[in-house]
Length: 231
Image (tube, rainbow, N blue to C red; front, side):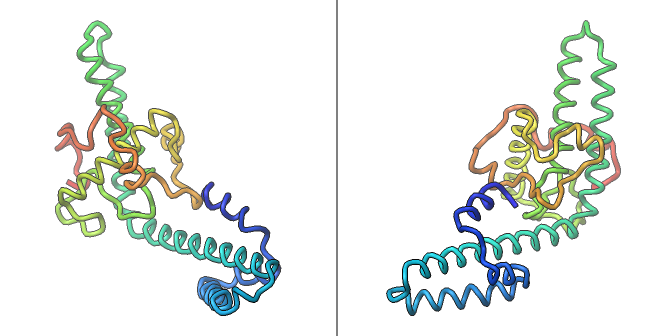
C-alpha cells in the first residue's frame, strides 16, 4: 500500500467489525457494500443523524480505497505474469551490457581523458538501462528497451511508445542519480526485484516531471549487434 493510500485510510477512521468482514470478503462483496451505502446516502442523507452520516461516509471511503487497492494488485499481478519472460531476458541483456561497460571503465587509460569519459558515459547508460528493466511500473504495458521484430507481449512500436519509453527512462535516470529508485542498482546486482508492495516507476510520473535528465538516451546505437536476445 502506498503512502497516499495509507494517509487517506487514516482519515477514513478505523473500520468497524462489520466493515472488516466486508474488506476480507473479496472485490464483489466490497462493490455490493459500496452500492448499498451509496443508495442509503442518496435516499436518506437529509434525515440521518450526523454521527451515522459520518460513519457511513467513512465506511464508504474505506471501501472505495480497498476496492482501488484490490484492482491495482490484480493489475500488478497480471502484468507481472504477462511480461515476466521479456523482462527476464532484458534483464540478462542489460546486466551483460553493464558488466562490459564496467570492465571498459576499469581498462581505460587514466591518461586518455576522452577514453575515460566515453567509458563512463557508456557505464552510466548501462546502469540506467538495468534500473529501467527492474523498476518499470507493473501497472502498465512493459515497453522493451531491446524489442524484437516479432515480440507480441510488449507495447507496440510507434512515436507515442518511443516517447513514453524515453520518459520512463529519464524518470529512472533521475531516481538513480538521486538514490530514490524503488530497487536501487546495488540491490539489483544482488538479484533483487520489485516486491508486491512496489509498483515501480511509471511513464505518467515522468510525464508530470517533464525532461528529468540530460545524460544518456534510451537507445544511442551502441552495442546494436552485440547480443542475440530481442534483436
